Length: 372
Image (cartoon, rainbow, N blue to C red; front, side):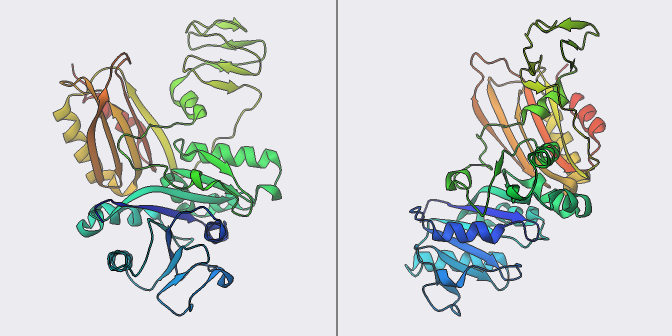
C-alpha cells in the first residue's frame, strides 16, 4: 500500500446538508470505494436503510460497497485502524471522506495530516468541501465565526437549499462567500445533487495545483477602474467612452473588461461585509530575495499563524528560472519548485485567507523581501 490514500474533508454548519450529501454519495453507483468517517456528534446520521451489516459493528458496509466508520475517539486512531484493516483485507476502500461536526474548525483536522508522521505516510488531503445553507447562510455567517472559518478553509463551496431563496439572495450570498474565500469555486446544489467529480480528486492541497481566484476578487485587489453605463473612470482619473481604456483593453456592454483582464458587471454594486475572515492578495513582478522571504514568513507565522487559515502562492525567486509554489495552513508551510516560467512573464502572486490579518503590514513586510 505505497500509494497515499486521498482524504476529503466535508464541513459546514448545523443543518447545511453534510449528511444529505454523504447519503447521496453512499447510494450513487459511482464505482468509488469510499470509507466515510462520520462524527458521532453530528446532527443527523447516515441513513440506516443503506446499511448492509449490523449497525453495531465498528465499521459498517453500505449497499454500494462503501464503508462507514463512526468516530469514537481520536481521529488518528480511527485512521490507523482503517489502514490496518485495509492491509489485512478486512476493509476495501481507495479514499476517505471525513464529515466534521457543524461547529468544527477544519484547520486542526487538516493539520493532522501534516503533523502526524504515521498519518502523513499513509494519507494525503485531496480537498476541503464546505456546504453553506442558502436559507440561513447569511445569518450564520453573521453570528458564527466558525462558519466563516469553514468557508475560509474551503477548496470547494456547495451552496445548498438554493430552491428556498430568491436568485438575488443566492447572488448576494455568493458575493459574500467570494469576499471571504476567492479561491473556492461555488456550486449550487439541491438535496446533495452534485457531480461527484466536483467533490473528489480536486487536488486542493497539491503544490502544483493552479492558484484559482474569483475574477471579482482580482478586480477588487488589482483594478482601480470604476465603470459606469456609457463610460467608465479609469485609474488614470479620466473618463472613457465604451471602448478603449488607457490600460489598452476594450470595455463592452454590461460586462466591462478592465486592466486586470476580467469582466465586471457595472449594474451591481455589492455590499461590503465586515467578516472576521477575509482574503487579500500580494502581487509583484520583482523577484523575492529567498533568505529575506524565508525569515519574514517564519516570523509572520509565529505571530499570526493561528489566524492564517489558508495561504498559497506562486513565487518569482532570485536565482532560479522556475516557479516556486508554496502553501500553508496555520503555522505549517511547505514549498516546492514548479515548472520553468518559459514565455510567461515572471511574477509573484500570494493569497492570504485569515482572521483579521493586518493586510497593509503584511504587504509592506513582503515588499521589504523583494530584491533591490
